[in-house]
Image: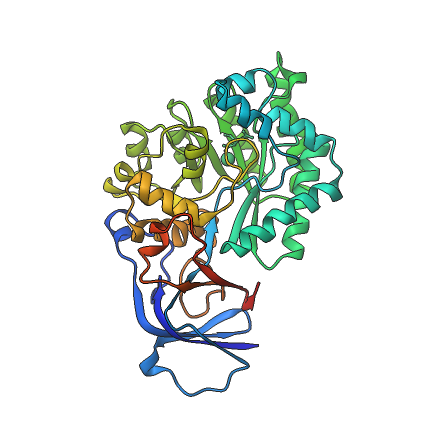
Amino acid sequence: MSILITNIKELLQVRETNISKVSGTEMKYLPIIKNAYVLIKDDVIADFGSMNDCQNITVEQTIDATGKLVLPTWCDSHTHIVYAGNREQEFVDRINGLSYKEIASRGGGILNSAKTLQNTSEDDLYKQSVKRVNEVMQLGTGAIEIKSGYGLTIESELKMLRVIKRIKQNFPIKIKATFLGAHALPNKYKDNKKDYIDLIIKEMLPKIANEQLADYIDVFCEKGYFSLNDTDKILSAGKEYGLIPKIHVNQFNTFGGVALGVIHNALSVDHLEELNNDDIVALQGSNTMPVSLPSCSYFLSIPYTPARQIIDAGLPLALATDYNPGSTPSGNMNFVVSTACIKMKMTPEEAINAATINGAYAMGISDLFGSIAKGKKANLIITKKVPSYNYLPYAFGDINIDSVIINGKCV
Ligand code: NIG
Ligand code: FE
């Protein structure tokens, strides 16, 4: 199948050399070609350039993109999109004055979602989850990371990871799987955290590795959840099985989780609503991508990641949704990009870089995703007619997407 997209008003994120991420001041630059074309052959970008250089070639389909922009699909490097049920009652409880932490300490929060998931069949969990996957694809997401962590028993963690594997097999979107057994301490282990960590390390990990169900290992490194010492142990064990660390850190407290992630050569450290200078220094010179989740800050009314501090220190930054039932019931990357501009003072160029090439880096896939380059996957967003790319984050509540191409096919 070949598709030629012609008369593109602006083709965004065009990279001649295959860079894996952009950092610091480089993030301010978003390379574009005005009045452009893109040629897709099967599932890859075969060619692109200015309309002036567009050869008269025969293709199976031509899409006229007059007045429209084309950009790579979003790379959402942090989600919990596989979950059962919802937590709208906790949402109302928070409106009425309870905090996220108070709800969790009453047995709500992650443990609430775990209980629901444990009582949901694998087929039902699959059905509930694919509905959301279809929705985020329509919203322009072409690659996504999905975590376990609402199972918290051997069977239910495996159930989640098997559902992720099934989605991977049945959907064109690129998927990376993360084992997050250390998301919360189940009630049964309330007074015996060591036994739960042993269960993760000695029982869950070998089974997950044996079935090749995960690429990454994650820990909720936070006061009241898993300490630095717990995190160190779990990440080390995961690495023994070939899983690469990616951790939840600094959502509510700063106590060295970022530096620990860097020591473990984590692919990313995610959340970072709280951040101090030691965290910045730890990240400098590392290969670890800081990831911000502005929809989570919005929904929980907690601070936003200090993006300016991070980027102005020469570091890269990626943006992701954190789609989950408790802190972020939304998988809309368009909203994430807007919110990053509006609330975190990222420029549109920085936000688009953070949600494409840097998101791809945080999933280890920037060789094939996250920019327009020859040979990369044909995963593209075609916008509606808009005045410029600044309009995308500006018109924050609008649906600016006309169509989405994944693996060379319209979805
Ligand atoms: O990334 N912070 C930890 N985990 C999820 C939310 C978990 C929940 O409330 O269900 C997050 O925000
Ligand atoms: Fe998360």
